Image (cartoon, rainbow, N blue to C red; front, side, top):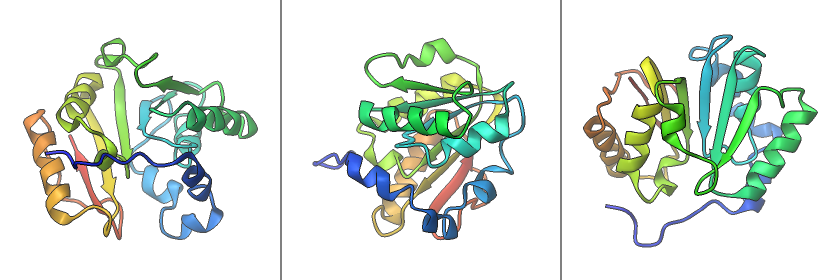
Length: 185
């Protein structure tokens, strides 16, 4: 069941998510390095302004691709500008939901998907997990993390149950400290 008042992260909060002190709690290198290798095709779903996307592009390298999917064009505009600044604009491809994002185009393409602090904002969670399952290659992984205090343990468990219904297995490990997090395969 979705919350009665669906919340979308305001664009101004995207700027706050880029502050360097965030690395103390959510270090992109530490979080992503175990999961992404050079040449991989990966997705940052709900990237905002690309806090994780830039590191994902560095890890995949020029032979890889990072698909960044968001519902807000302003977030993607800032992400594109940041990707140029960091020299990874040839690796990052942005897609706007309800415009140029079509999961069927990426069927069996992705090695890894990052869902960082976004699942609670998605109104149709079953469709989200079905679409991700469609886009993942066999053996692909999904890192899902949600903020404690904003998302309850029960809501996170419900999200994992929806992922299981879409065909995912939930691994026992907890990949991100101080959050609700899991790896789906």
